[in-house]
Length: 402
Image (tube, rainbow, N blue to C red):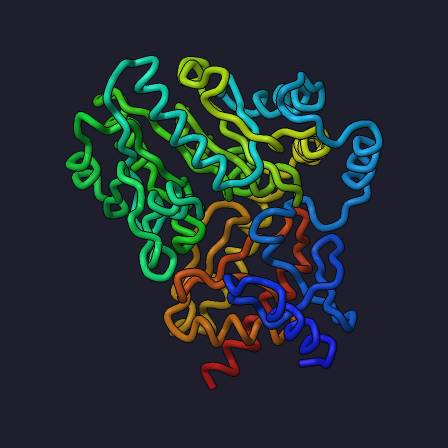
């Protein structure tokens, strides 16, 4: 490690709460699909701020929109009507079948809002005592107390936070009978991710999704889809649930919505939106003028440059390269999974060692569940970038296996 890195690491230890297992890398600037450390060393970015900077880093067109709006108005609160927020809402709703949107600041807030909306709708509109939300094992829905409880993972993520809120049930992944058995008179909703990102890049099977939709209709409960990571063209459609031909009652968005600025959204049907009334839910910063203007520009670019199609194409290209590489490393590469550029390489062994080796080869990606390399690069990633990754992976695997 360089002296500059050691200095910044020591400085942080005196200033910041120790909640992150930092990568051994300090980023000083970022551009397009590249990151640069304190010494100017270049890294290929296959993480994109954890599926956030889907249009690449430091885009001039987004910076111009940000600066222009900041000179007009940054923040006045949601006590006032604001045209940038309405412009964004119109563009966002045009991409899906939802009728209304609530803006917030993050994915956890969006999922918290979705849970609150489901309960409020059942209580206020349907006049039913339904409050429980069913989620799936290995799901990840956020870090607030409610979304943490909804998350179907255990260990350090939940340790020390008891008592966790009541009203959440987690069932085994892919087990329809477990879902059916968990539904009762107090069930308000089933909450799912179309592709579990933190859970190991696991897409839900189509038949399983069909069964979930049928169970919701049969029991009069809501379907919530967490699209915080999968939304905004990441999987090859604007929304991942569109691959499955379904219409959620509520779904959420955040990560890529404003390409790095803090922005989240809860989208829902006009019927379910009746659950929210003045004073029932709010946020000070959500949907502010600057983030709304940037998010509206993000949507324009996503549609004009056909980023969903690009994600699908690049994802297929990556899959083809991995399958070729698997022939050379059959005992280490177990397979691939995902949708579009939410792409996972399943490893049979040596996950942490392989991830570390890739970083040493100047490639940044993520290891989830200890066995899956999660690739969520900017959607602007090129075939040359992907081939660079594959060459690095080949060298790392050869070294590890040797």
